[in-house]
Image 1: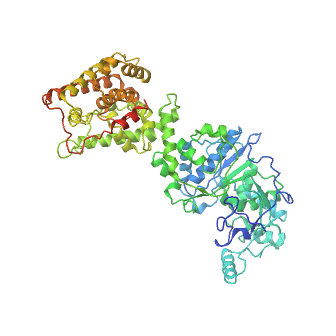
Image 2 (image 1 turned 120 degrees about the vertical axis):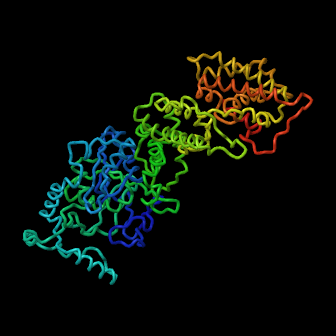
Image 3 (image 1 turned 30 degrees about the vertical axis):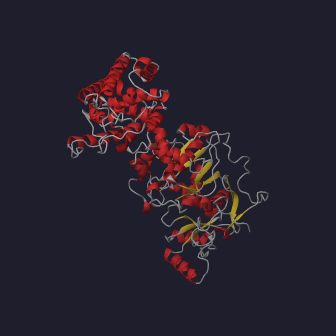
Length: 640
C-alpha cells in the first residue's frame, strides 16, 4: 500500500504514533493513502475548494489544557482559529480542557487569559465570558459526558470495563515480552448489559470503553486530504475510572454541543482524528471540518520542546517583543499567504487576507526574521500618531520603558563616574541629559517615540536591544559634552587638516546655519520646514563660499552642509538624517547645539598656530568618535 508521510506530503517515521506503538515503528505500517477517486466510507462531505473561506460564519475554538503555559505552537493554533472566525464573521470560543486533574498547574488558567489578551486574541465565549453553550470548563460539564457515555452503553456502542489498572499493566508487560499486541484484549467487551449494570450497582469500579468498529475509519482533512489507518482502533477509554472523560470523548461532545464548524490544530492530533470521527458516527453527528497544522521543529527537525526557550511565550515577552511582531512571525509558520500579501502584517491584515492554505509537513522555526519584524512593527507604532490606547500601552511597555530603563542605567553610571577613563575622556562620553528627559511623565515617552520614529530605518540593530539603542543614539538623549567638539576639531576628526583659516571659515558657516534655522519659527519647526531650509542652504552660493573645494561637485557641496551639521548636532558624522535629527531635538536644542559648534570652531581658530604652519597632524591616539571617510558620509547623506 502507498505510504503517507507528512513532510512534503508524506508522513515520517516516529513523527506521529498512537498509544502503545513504539517510536521506531514506521507510521506507514498503519496508515495508508486512499485515492481521491475511492469515495467509499468517506465520513465527511466532499470539499469543493478546501482552502477557500466558507461563505457562512465559522465557529472555531481554542481548547488548551491548563497543565502548562502558552507556547509558540499553541499561540499559532489560537491565532489561526481566531483568524478564521474573524474572517468569516463567526465566533472564537475559548474552552479549558481540564479533565486531567492530576496535572493541573495552579496559575495556568490565569496566565492563559493574560497571555491571550496580551496577544490581542480576544474570545467571544469562554470560562470568563458567558455564552449560550457553556460552561466552558470541561470539569464543569461532567453530567453531559456521562449522559452521552450512558447512551452509547445502552445502544451497545460502548461498555463498562472492570479491569483494574494493575491487570491491564500486567497484560501489556506480558504481551510486550512475548511480542504480542499490547492493545486492550477485549476482556469486558462481551459482558452483558445486565451483568454490567449489576456489577456497577454493587460499587465495582469501572471505566467506559468505546466499542470500535472492525474496519479503520477514513477521515478528510483540509491540509492532508483523505487517509485512514491500516488497522482499526483499539477499544479506547472514553470515561475514566474517576468519572472524568478522556480528551477524545470530551472533545467530540463539546465540539458538537458548542456548534464548532472547524477544528484547526497541530498535526500531532492527526492520527487521533479517526477516533473522533468514529464517535461522531456513533452519535449520528456531522463532524466539523479538520485542518491539521505542520509540527514546529528546530533546525535538527526535532519537535520544538516546551523546554526550549524559543517555544515559550514568556521568552518573547521578557525580550519585549511586541505582540504584533510575534503574531506576524507565528502566522508565517505554515500559512501560505496570497502572493500579493505583504510580509509585515498587522492582526487586521491577517484577518483581511486569511485563507485555509496551510503548508504540509514540518515547519522549521528560525528566529532570524523576528528582529526584522519587531523593527518594522516598532517603526509602525512609533510613527502612528493615531495609536489606540492598547497600542500605546504596548509601545510603552515593550519599547519605550525598556529604553528608558537603559537610559537610567547609563545615567547612573555617568553619575557614579564609571564612564571616565584614564586621561579624562572615554570614547563616547556623554554630557548632561536633555531637559525633556528629566521630566518623568508622558512627555518622556513622547520624546522617545519621536526619536524612534526618526531613527528606526537607520539602525542596524533590532529595536529590542534597548541598551544598544540608547547608547547608539546617546546624543539624542544626552548633550554632546563640553570640549568634545573642540577636541574632535583639533585632532582632525571633522577635516583631516584644520588650519586656522579653515576653522575660522567653519565658524562663519556655523553662524550662517544658526541664522538660517533660527528663521524657522517654533510652530513651523518639523521635518518639512527643516528639509526646506536645508535645500535653501545647498542652493546658496554664499554658503558654499565658506569652503574651498578643488573639484566642486554635488557630493562635496552636500558634505559641506551635512558634515558640519552632524558634527555640531551629534558630535560625530554618523546618525539619523539631519532632518530627523533636528525634528527630534526640536528647535531650541538644535539652535543651542549649532551655537555650541560655532563657539567651538571660533576657539579652535583662535588657538591654532600662525598661518605659516600649514597643517596640523592627526594625533596618533585612538580617536574619541571615529568618523568615516567622505565617501561613506556622502552615501549616508544620500538618504536625506
